[in-house]
Image (cartoon, rainbow, N blue to C red; front, top):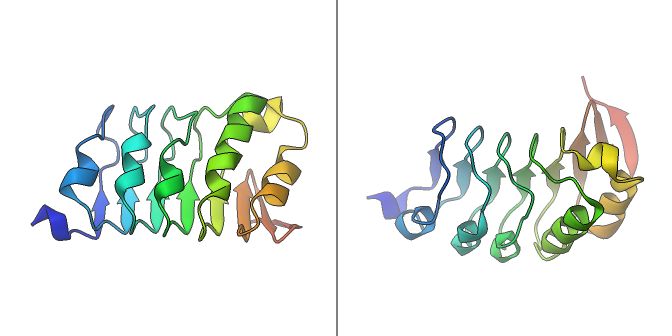
Length: 148
């Protein structure tokens, strides 16, 4: 029964380990994992059909594994711990490998203050990206628009 699930919400459960999730729910298209205590998301790379992933409000500073999520269109990393220039560069490298990624939410990550010109770096490096949401601004294909 779990193997046929396409959407699951596991938010606010204080999860620290999701190793078993991709083994149980191989066909997930939508996954809500916001507001947990996750630091490692490598196992999610086994979810090839995943289209939307919400990882907001965790303690994630590495996106290792997500490069194998070849169907991922929308990724929410709001309020995580991507801080240093190297962490941001490593994250960009992973995101570049996702062929369908169009929407990225990075609000509230320390890299916004710690890495100069980080928006330009992200938008210029991920050619599939159509929407970058950060703070109260949304970048559409390089144009900046205030979000209401």
